[in-house]
Image (cartoon, rainbow, N blue to C red; front, side, top):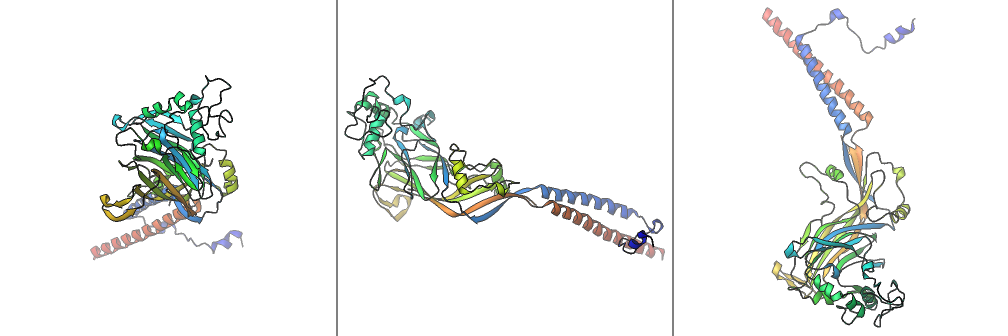
Length: 460
């Protein structure tokens, strides 16, 4: 028997001869309609296959010993830059006082004149402008009983007003306006300070901290420690010739922990009814607080959650260990940490609760809370305490079908993925073609049978 005839018995698709087929007008209409429907549904399957969405995952954050970047942009319209100090400290015992690297101060015109930027300068305690180059090379300035700062331009000497101020801070002495201090009188420190009294200040930039519970604060005067107590020299802040004094009225333009999540990603996280913005990740952005009390304290308690964004095509083999990531991040400038060459982003989002109180103590009767009492004492300023959450959030994009920081042990991962695989797309196409033609055949058969019955009725 020929080989061809062996498969003839297995043919599940029996054919009819051309003479046995009947073609009708209704059948042609159903055929055209079914083809149009098939093309429309296949285009829908293709669009669904090409769509990319962000798929969130929640995992335990196993990274340890990591660093975290904090980026801030905060304006203080009623206190000059000369009086503001940024300090950072955490539970590991690490302290950064008078943070200057990566941070800039922008002098602002008085609020009555519009509060526009005047000048921008780095927070460098020993800028070249303060070096007395006209002095005798053998000159050694007096430190007035305090030990010379270890980073003095000339070892064992205080040749500038800033060096005298730092020497005083090292032994917890108040400095004041620098009266009777040769270096400060030579540099006209008190005159320059008085000239800035009505100015405001914007602090902007970023700095790195250990990824542990800690806080940073912006407070008046040079900071110093007296045993376990952290103090600030408040003389120049409280003894202000400005009517009403200086206050910590402030506007938070932005505050984030890590790099900004790309705008195109935040759009994928929301919906048309409730679109997402970076305000969902950084809720303190565009926050304002106003007070006329110089002795006022603002505290923001922040809970930080590690968040990763992994783009479509991200390869887990390229993921680095925490130790290697930390080693590389230490080589990057401020602002470059957390961004991968493949488009991935390692950042943080946070939730926040706020608290404010007068350092004079008393109740919140003016705000309608007589039962709420506050203790006396403290330091005026803005305090942000951060704690990391135990969760890590991962963003997966799918192609769609004294404030404290609380650092969560969990991580959120947002990963880009396609809603369908290519094989799923082919399966959908086959289902569309088969289902549409089957339904079309049933409709055509029903129309044909109905037409034949009506024709027989008319013949009778």
